[in-house]
Length: 442
Image (cartoon, rainbow, N blue to C red; front, top):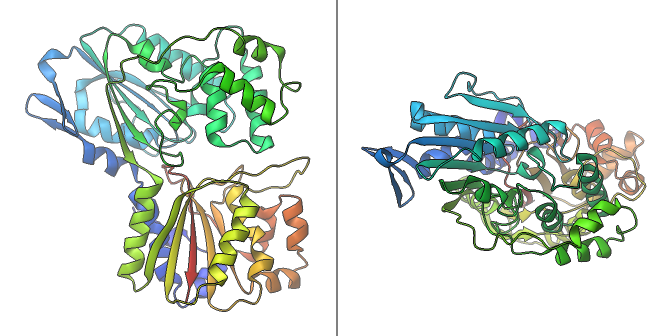
């Protein structure tokens, strides 16, 4: 699908290159479209199921089960059902959003909505049901896992001795502290029976295959949805170091410390089956670059590994943009930043924060635009995916009585850009491959 008509903002609507810019952003989102990606890699052929070069003889399989979780789960499940039809014996889907796909009467699939970014009781229900289903599988069965961003929160099964509320409190503290997603996932793998290879262990002795839409910088398999079908490369000791790094040892329940001090299960030799990345930040960035060239820009990808504090990285990118002499030019940056909230209570997300951090830096600049975009369609607890900034943003905000620096201090980007009508609101995209930032020089 095309997202161009949903990418309305004041600045883009009036800019001479606005339509071209919307097309570039839309191309990035389209490249991460889950159904399209599944159809590329999953094929039903005469007498067999093929995943890339791997073939499974259907005559040797008694049951095919589908387990899909993450923000793209409904779309990935829908594509799988279209390909395999009644060959699917059953399965479970867990997602953040109500599905726009007709899955209700397909192959005995259970559909669950659950909490994100903090797991809730629905996440626990979905996780326990998945573990129960997998406990019944045999060596004659095949389990297809469709995994996408958000999966860590959307299914959960805390280790014994740990309550859901303990896990919720820990997740909230880590998010507020500015911990990187890979650090958060280290804790999740240590404290959850599903993660760090837990689903692969639960599915044994069935054959398994995992198709993955990556929402993690550089796509390490153990980090995507906390690696439920791959070995866990980190230890309880690693998890304790992260808690110490962010001064959380005295803020978290003692039960967590007790668990991390115990010997952990060795899942380093689990059978992972076929594991395949079918969509990523890099793939979306490359699609945007190709579209930019097609519509007349010189284009390049600066990196798809951007991490760090959103405001700091935003200012670095703004300085890079302002130094550019070449035009028309589109530079694409991918990754995932963080925001350390402290005691602030503003509304926004990391993409809006990054955009707000460059407003003063870019004030008065001619023919420059910086755009931030969360590929899942929402940024933090808001309905915006990011924002648009140019040399007029600060001036327009002052006329409306908005102080950019004060809003940044309060991490309150949403009302700032909402007043300017410069929030990007494509709606839930049904996918998630991290964030993209676009630097345009005209």
